[in-house]
Image (cartoon, rainbow, N blue to C red; front, side):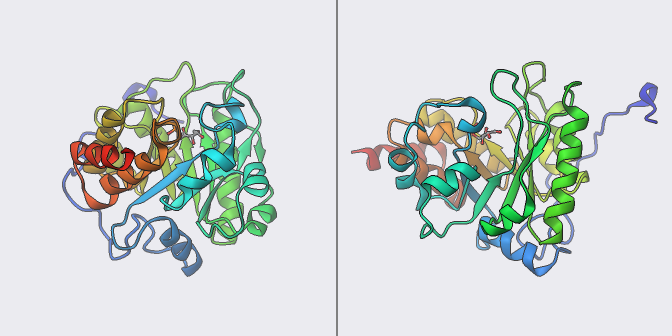
Length: 290
Ligand code: R5P
C-alpha cells in the first residue's frame, strides 16, 4: 500500500547527465534481444537516435477527422518522409500499399469512441500484429481516470507480455481525458508507469517541465503534436521537445491538417533530425510550399 501521507515529489533528475548504458542509440534498450533492437532501429534512426512518426490513427476514436477523409489522397504522399507510420489495422490493411516498406507502429487497443473518450478493454490479437509485420504496438494508458485506469494498466501489461514474446516493442500512449491535468506531474507519472509496466517507447505531450518527464523515463519519449497550431508554433514545439530530450515526435494533425502537409512533414523531419531551428524549419516549409 502506498504511504499516501508521505508522497515526496522527486527533485533530483540529473538534468544534463546522459543516461547510463547508452552504447545503443535507443534509451533503455541496451539489454533487449536482437529482434527488439532491430525493430527499434527501424523506428529510431541509428544515426540521430530520433524518429518522426506519422500518426493517423485518429479515426478509430474520433471518426472522421479533418485531413484524414481520404487516406489515399491525404496520407500516402506523406509516408516517404516519415520514419514510421502509426495507424490502425483497418487502415493499414485497406489503404496502405504493401510496397510502402515503412515500419509500422500499430494502434493495438480499442474499446471506445470520442463520445466516451478512453479505450480500455480491447487489444489486438498478437498473431494479427505478427502477420502485419509490425515494428511496434501502441496501447493507451489512462492514469488518473477512475473508470479507466486499472483497465488500461491491465491492457498495457497484457500487450507487453504478448509482444515481448515475439520481440515486438510496445509504445505506451499516455491518455489525456477531459478530467486529466496536462502538466509535468501527470505526464511524468503516466510516462513512468508506462515504462515500469514494460513499454519500450512512451508517447506523451510537451509541457512545462518536460525535461523532467524525459529524464525520469527510462525509455525514449516521443511527443504527440495535439491540436493544429500555426506551422511555426508546431515547429517550435518539436524543437523544444527535442531540446528537452525527446527522442522524436509522433505527430498527426499538425502535419496532415497543415496548409501544405508534404512541406510540413519535411520541415518537422529537418527540425527533429538535422537540428534546424523553428525559424529555419519554417523557412524550409515556406520554400517547399512555393
Ligand atoms: C493519440 O492517442 C492519437 O492516437 C494520436 O496518434 C496522437 O494524439 C498523435 O496525433 P496528434 O499529433 O494529432 O495529437
